[in-house]
Picture 1 (cartoon, rainbow, N blue to C red):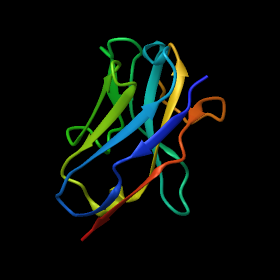
Picture 2: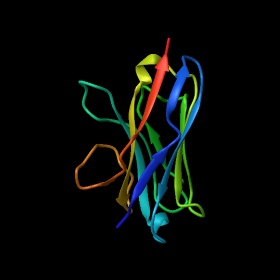
Picture 3: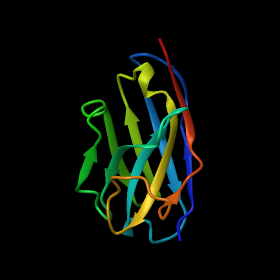
Length: 124
């Protein structure tokens, strides 16, 4: 069982950067693949990035954020990060992290562990 809490969201101008954090409970954090998703008003929740369990050697990104976002994890801190650079207004959304035992996450699923989300707003 994993409990997730996101932080680091806020208001930023286009072209700026934010670093989101997702703190997880439990001593088995390293056994979970982690992912970031986002959801804007009137839109479905969409995949942003994912990282494999343990050392996080495998990473994958949505085409819309490739080259701008970086996902990473620090198992000593039970935390996964999303570094977001060159932010665009279309990145505005609630960002949520999710956990899936032993596998990375590519699609949203109610069966995952989910955080409550953190708001990211990018102004023009």
